[in-house]
Length: 156
Image 1 (tube, rainbow, N blue to C red):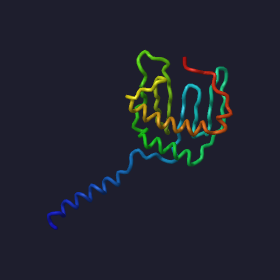
Image 2 (cartoon, rainbow, N blue to C red):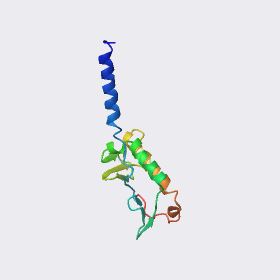
Image 3 (cartoon, rainbow, N blue to C red):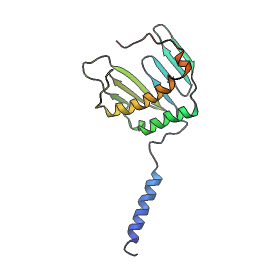
Image 4 (cartoon, rainbow, N blue to C red):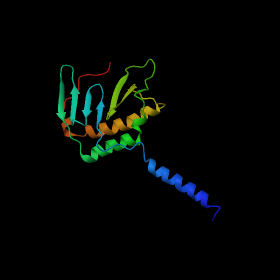
């Protein structure tokens, strides 16, 4: 028993330290986020969705359910959004158009630059896309958005 006692103590210390550290990717359930691209922007703090057109813009109130917001924040966490760089450039040289998407979580902003054909070698781009797609799936399933006219703005 005397031989194993120091090992047991060390094992206990390691276990306690691992459980007390917590998950650094955990996101506060009161966090806010912004989804943005060339034509559309959604801000969860104001519950507003804005679509840009050539000559004007339209803004509608778009409230997410608690479950929808939780799903989005969980995806931010699962993809370690807080660890992404401020700019992810996955665009291919000489291939246009370059597309600029942006996500914000609280005060952290990440801009994603890519082409229509996204690179499978761009690891951070894949993480960004997972969050972006969940937000799009939820937002664009709402009747308020389905009723809006498509934007006349496009990448050239």
